[in-house]
Length: 224
Image 1 (cartoon, rainbow, N blue to C red):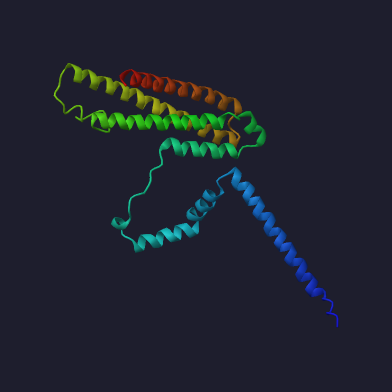
Image 2: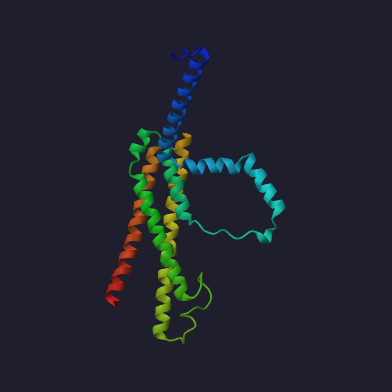
């Protein structure tokens, strides 16, 4: 006995099922391609927490938790890292032709970020050696018995600290300038030429940091 031939409703259900499966697969592949270009996860979560649902959850949390029970942030994102991430994301959102014209931008941004991190690390080392986070107050070297060699070492370290701090500020400023001009370019008020000029200035900052690092390495080799 042969099985009954499916009616129009059954055929329509089959067609609908195949169409739905194909649509879901196509959407998934599109999301995968989009995720490769931009930080899609961050955008989705940002939209969620900054939207009505996120505001409602924060209001509920404030009612249930006291201010003292909220722990401090577990991590701190350095300024240069946040600026570099923002610049790279803005760059990926530009048209393909514009990205090609500014194809050196990602490498320059990454180098600036790495150089700024090196300067930040060296600044922390110098602050620790001088016993403070700023330019004031006695520290490990400041607590020692004053004398000509001691004073000369302290003066050299303070000079280096001021120079490192200036180079860190230059790198952060260059990253911020690139980020702002990328925003202007996306909004239609900026130009590729302006960003090309920014990249040239950023390379000069990176070269100065490189000279500072090379000088430090040469001194360490002589002492070691």
